[in-house]
Length: 83
Image (tube, rainbow, N blue to C red; front, side):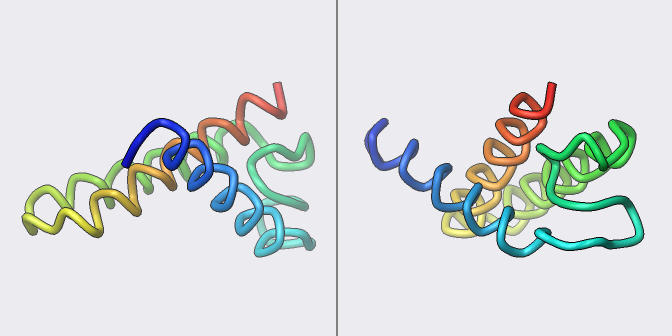
């Protein structure tokens, strides 16, 4: 993947997250960019995604690793958007 492909993948994942979480849920309303989601929840979401990166490394699964790294980046971007 080149840089442009990576940025595109992160943008697509952000759009997926926004669509998936564009509702009320147990942890607030919206995705990790929403001020209605407490920072502790956002940190837990980011940690969960990092755990999935570690699992992909342990599984020697490069495809899953790419997917999970994009998800980590997208969650981090969402948190930054909400600051």
